[in-house]
Amino acid sequence: MSMFIARRINHALMFSLVLTIGALAITSNAYAINIRVSQESAPGAADFDANILGFVNEFNTGLTTAGFYQYNVPNGASYNGELNGGPIPVSSLSQVFLVNASDGLSLVVVHDNPSDGSGGSTQTRWNLMGDTATQILADDPGENLVVSMGGTQFDSTKNWIACCTDGYAIGSLDGNWSIFGQFLTAPTGITSWSVVSSDFTATPLVLTPGRRVRLDTVPEPGILALFGLGLAGLSFARRKKT
Image (cartoon, rainbow, N blue to C red; front, side, top):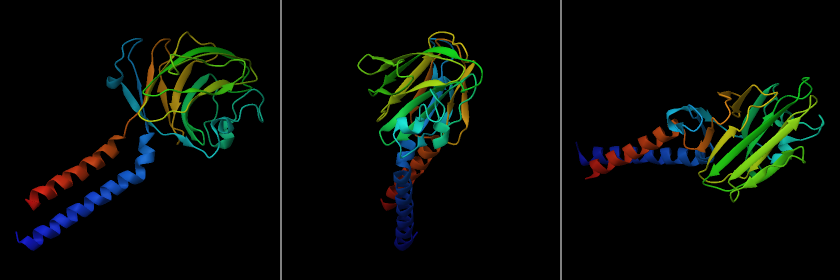
């Protein structure tokens, strides 16, 4: 192969690598808060990596987390986030989702659907690793989260009547974090739970007290593959150059 052709190949490979890195830079905000969903096979099993259920993305808004949740208006004592593009509340379902708002990224939990003729009660716990956070929102201000362990453990006891929903938000979540959630006791009025993505697809979870779900920040496989192709191209270009 002539020196001229080798240089042209090297230039093409380097250009491909630049495009790959550019694509990664453009998507960095998206994959940095792309959330992997896993659930252990049994309470205390901790085999999350063997039970990966999929990935979800966050809802984005220019509002604050509380503004997005829109507690109490127009439906009293309830979540109204569907009016701002959030998930629609569902009867007997606890929904978990992430909101990237003006005050940061928050984990939001919404229990039940308003005016479905039934109330309920739940006891949940979330343990955060790799970051610290606090309560951003309390649906029913008298039922605040108990935040402990230096801002890494969040205990919630919620009770609601037939007219209403209940819920809360934890934030802000920054960097590479993992958060583990569970029902501490069997709930009333709730028969299932799921994690909801910004395209409204839901990842169902098994509702067994003590059986934890893990949400953590990792790049999607497609992004990792793209980065790998870029590195492979760079390696090939270096070999050709020598």
